[in-house]
Length: 162
Ligand SMILES: [Zn+2]
Picture 1: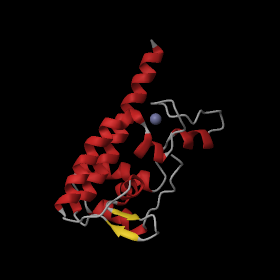
Picture 2: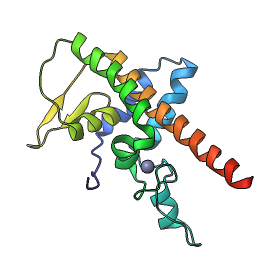
Picture 3: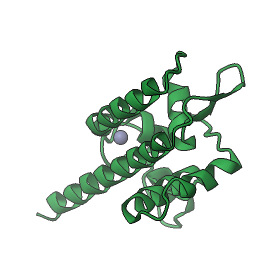
Picture 4: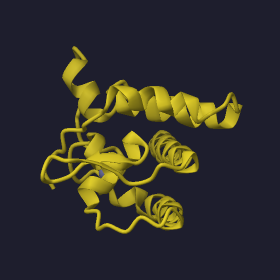
């Protein structure tokens, strides 16, 4: 899959925080998602681009291709179970809203970063879900992927140290 250019609406970054209502555990998840939305989340491709020493851009988890945001959110096989578990919750929240429309994988993942909004393949702005719970679930998914990635990287380093 080629790299997706993430589309982020300015208003959506504000919504991420509004949905938290000051609840600490949600704020933490929202922080991670906000970093992903604004390109401040450090991935291997970022490291490799900005580090003066030679850093490999390859995903430290699956080691099969460069790790960028698309890879983390959509592609990496090592994060598959976390992704599908969260996606199931999102799907349910989405169904509860009663909105029926077909959403492609690509559009679906735009929606995760934007909390339910995405630009369709025809360039139209589509709102998948209005519910605030959906926004929180989106942050939760980003957070779970982040935690799992961190855990896997630490494990790898520990095994190398042996
Ligand atoms: Zn990977």
